[in-house]
Length: 142
Image 1 (cartoon, rainbow, N blue to C red):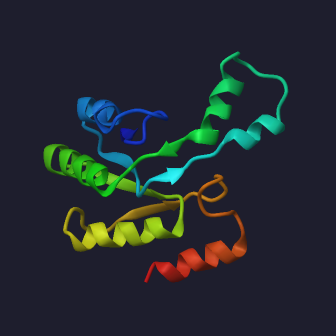
Image 2 (image 1 turned 180 degrees about the vertical axis):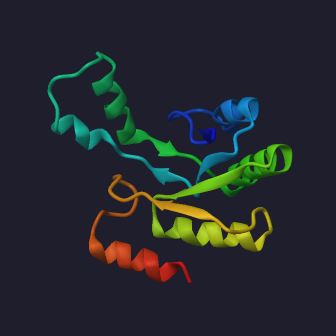
């Protein structure tokens, strides 16, 4: 099975993020379910030995970074891959609101079930990695 991301790299346009998936026509692709502050800069405090010179600068850049994935972006990506390639998705939810975004997308008929959801806990700007948030995510699934 081929699995591709539609998330791409930080700062890419939706067309750039989708290029690999369109080219390979995967059975499954990842789909982030919303925009968010994506702060991985705290990792700079945990490490002092870097494998590559660009790593600290890249991490620091996320102090002023928003991962953009608007409803228009989500619709574009889903329609391009579902209608054009028959791709199914692994929906990445970095916050509880992303679960509600996913539910709304299903109501719009852009996708149908069954679905695969991956909750991503512990990224600064998203939902924290603690039991209360896990329980809230379970409650939000409806």
